[in-house]
Image (cartoon, one colour):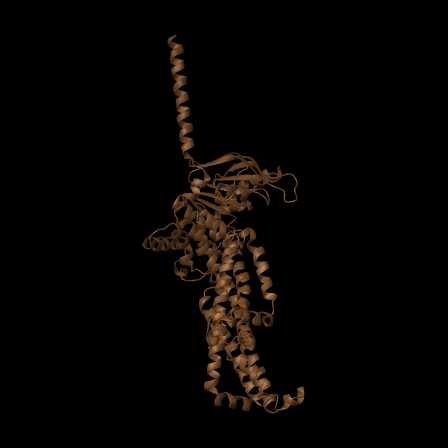
Length: 268
Length: 282
């Protein structure tokens, strides 16, 4: 009983129960059309949840194809961007003289809006493949990669350099080589910082994947379906894809939290 | 003539005996600090700041010696210089006839810092194991040594715990176990118990003396606590600040083994007063 009580502590309530209750409240207001009255909308532009759910179940196979495309872009960009960002942080740590300054310049890339780079990258990658799906996928992944690189490089650089007091002295007292210091101290120290970066990057990779699909040459993906259906005034279908997009973001974030919980189990 | 020859022979023999004695003494000396000066450049562009000035000190093998002084007297700087984590501006240190760097590269130092510096991604066992991994000691031997060290510091049943699951005193004991695991010749301790509460500190004092007796290491212990220095040491080196210099060396004649009860004796209190007076005269 004690164990059960400690599992459902205050933090669990604030992080899970409150958002769920808020979601249920919104769904009830929405389904009973009280929400429509509050914000002055009609059921054509804001269809009822039941109808949106019906569209999702009716078009499940179609939706899955688009979900697959979006997830590949989001995950592919996330992995590439995170690896590249981590690599940049390693380079900045190995060459400390210009390392942190270089990263500050790199962080300027973060200020470029996705809407601006997505069409440019589409244009730049037009010769990548003859298959429009592949070259389009590549362009979208590049957009996501740029979004994820900066947060990973800055955070993991902090992980490599912000060491506990005396930990470098301890290594030096054992005459540890630079490679040993790197692999036994800097890399393990950077892991929580990697997860801090991923907590920013995972939602960002889904958002940038959705936005990059808006501008992509090949018509596929959850983001593209939202746009296409709004253009055709099929708001219920558009809302179904919006709900799916939220679902993708939430599922990826939950997976991240589970992995983080397992890998950082021993740490406080 | 015969008498003068005899006298000359006697003198020569006495000289030889003296030389032998001093050689024997030198052999006994583990760390020799001669005219050591350390200064740091002033960050605001002024004259260099002298941290230590003309330090001369001999530390004998197996001795427990404390460096005692107020903040800013350079005691930690002195310890770091012996450990080759800091370079002297002039003068020198020899450790067993070698430079501190050579001793460090031979991994003959065990260092315990102000905080335990445990890696929170490693369990207690793996923290103790860490320096041995870097030395390339085979796994079987590492495991055996970790077990022995944890037994020595009384943490056998905590091997699988992570640092945040231990109290401050336990964490510091892990730090001591890790320092001893590589079988160092010299144990350098930089205010290791300063952040601990009085009860834990006293327990660790007794533990440290027990470990010292068992391992027979030379221990250089930095502290700003007079009672701690008197209770633990064979000699207390009092450092005065601005610039840091040796102002007194007090022999602690308390008999060993020592227990906490010794703190209630008149001899202990007299020694505390003697050390304190050497501060007052600064």
